[in-house]
Image 1 (cartoon, rainbow, N blue to C red):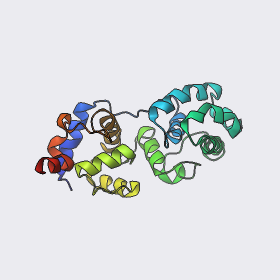
Image 2: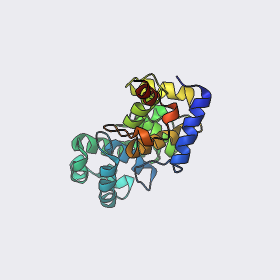
Image 3: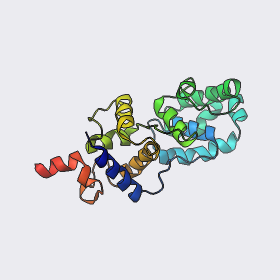
Image 4: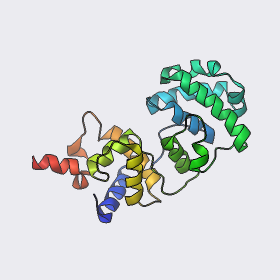
Length: 215
């Protein structure tokens, strides 16, 4: 595992490489990010960003989505995969946001997890990006893979364990943006199929790179 000095260096290097540590999903309203994140399951953010403008133009308010039937939502999200389950979750979550939370996206993990289709990954993203809660960790595929390569985690693929390990070592005020920067780094440099190690700014602190050098 990394020392606090090494963790700080990794955090700062990512900040230097990706100054805008922002979510890749595009949205205008809080609940739009909630639903875009649901659509992103087993789907790329790029595809979701292509789909959501038409979806939210057809259903411009939370009330419109709540009054819809899932079958009316399905055609707009078909290309995201698992569209029937996702459409049902979006409609039911819209109704619950109105009936239980006054039309607002709730700000605690416990409340968010009551919403249909919302797991810890989605809840953490909402807590970080919407409510600016310190210490949240969005353990998506990029985060799990890259932190394992770096040695920030023990290499586990379990999102819950990765979240716990990163919460223990990352500065709380940096953790949310850190996860967004890992997504950007995973797309630009540390790609899953062919990581560009020679051009990676994180080389000095990367266990995977150091191991390769020793072989």
